[in-house]
Image (cartoon, rainbow, N blue to C red; front, side, top):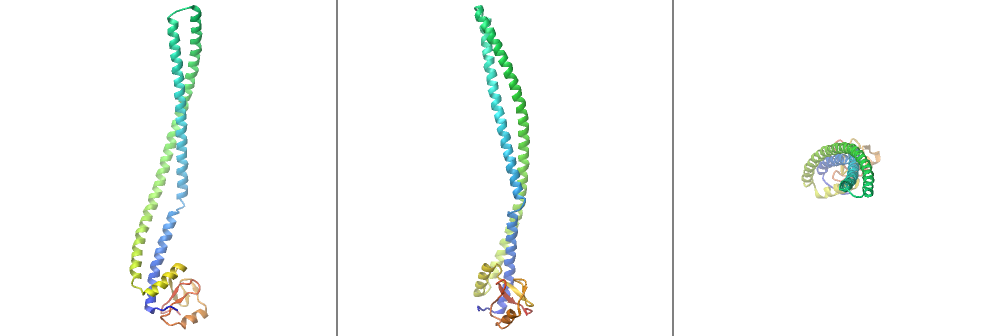
Length: 244
């Protein structure tokens, strides 16, 4: 068995307490990083963004439709003005009659186009109103998402700051422990998740289990400077004065 003075082994309990604190901070950090509110907030933001994009596309389509109708109205108006100019200039009755018929047809076409133009304008007004509502909803979703992110970032920042301080304290404390003992502790911590725990009144605080009479007898037979391990958790068992 590896060995270390009993007083030195007792120092492992303070080191283990610091490691437990670091572990607790890591657990809190992971919990914040996977906060259950993040998923719904992300979904709400994505849906609001998609709705806003869809509303923008519908408005753009209606505006293009309106521009096309307006162009046709302008084209028909130009043709009517040209035919009327020719009509007023006079000419053969047959030609004038044809111009009158053409003007009548163009006027009817212009009336239909203007009706269509009004319909598109009404539709565009509704789509723009919906676009405004979608933009407002997106703004709310963005603000809510940012508020949540800010809240979590603030807490994560506090945890990071605390962890840095504890890690420094741990590093300073570990530098004063016997190198051989520290090596055993570090390997045990990496493998078992707990480096050392107290053996108190026959119970391992590493596993929370009472040791069997046989295990206790084996520990009693070990010298004080021998490093013993918990049969259940595998961590180093530090024998306090009240261990048995």
